[in-house]
Amino acid sequence: MNWWQKLQENSLARFGAILLLIFYLSVIAADFIAPYDPYVSQIDGSLLPPTTIHWRSPDGQWIGPHVYPTTQSPTDLTTGDRDLNVDFSKPSPIKFFAKGTPYRLLQLKVPLPPKFEEKEIFSGIELNRHLFGTDGSAYLNLLGTDEQGRDQFSRLLFGGRISLFIGLVGIVISFPLGMIVGGISGYFGGWIDAILMRFVEVLMTIPGIYLLVALAAVLPPGLTSAQRFLLIVLITSFIGWSGLARVIRGQVLSIKEQEFVQAAQAMGATPWRIIVRHILPQTATYIIISATLAVPGFIVSESVLSLIGLGIQQPDPSWGNLLSLGTNASILVLQPWLIWPPALLIILTVLCFNLLGDGLRDALDPRSLQE
Image 1 (cartoon, rainbow, N blue to C red):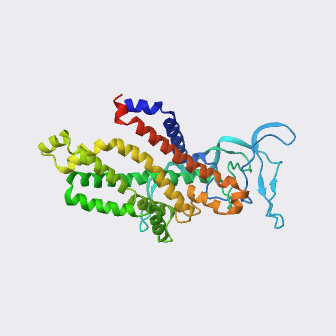
Image 2: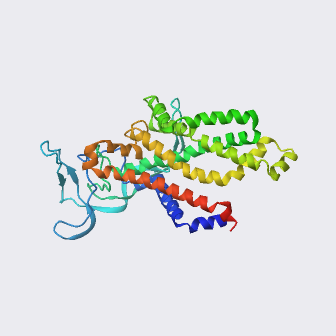
Image 3: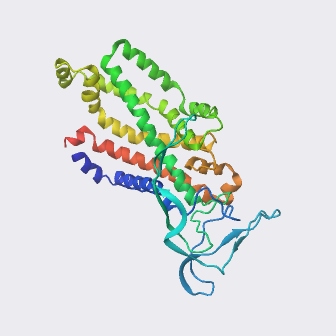
């Protein structure tokens, strides 16, 4: 357990791991944490700034944290200004575990190819309580609303489900493929090694982002976001395993000459058993570190595709298509609260994975384990 103690002593790696845990738990429980349905628009609530929380009434009386019904008037064609209309006669107290839109917590569905429908694995727990909300007609929009009047904080939480889990799903698909191809190539060598490595080299010459754009552009237009999510994962996974295969091949070339492998061969173990049971586990340190550092690449790929309109499509949220609002110069200048949150979350997530990966690399370094 020496590596675990070293990882705990690394303050940056611990910070990254804790922040990632908070992010993942938040998006898993998005139905409960988000105060509103991310698809429902508020009447006269387009492009509202973050809601101001008041503690006292207009006449100075203490009534605790509350908000007031807020709408925004149409844009003045002369000045371009939009005035906020606040109804101070209807205070709405802020409450924890407030009643709201019914939902199913922990509902689990698996997206399938276009010819099939989503398969429901677990129907979830039916609830109507949210972590926080208001008791009244006013809305609490922590990060304001978008151009359709939808709560930006709720959409950010639900969008994180796609942006965060696309990396984990991508690793589950691409890493076993890279391990198996690299293991077979390094163990058998000869013509098998030559063919597999030439194929890997061809994949490595393909510019990833251009391939993603080209393939995403030819996807059928009638796909749901769940099906598009699945196809994006498959595309990114298909081009993401080649580098791992080359590294695993190099490690297998040295591992297969060691005595425990020769002993397994002498005892009559099959090549497949030797590769899977004896050789590949020896590469676990590199695989764990590489997997941690590979997740940000999948997240950025999804964000870029959604940003340019080829990934997850509106009205379904993802951090990428929430960030795409930044292509509108007026929103970038007048409503910056719509741009900074998804941008900061993408940056923080990538940074945390890199910090955790660096910490694992230091903790699992064989030289440090011997100290």
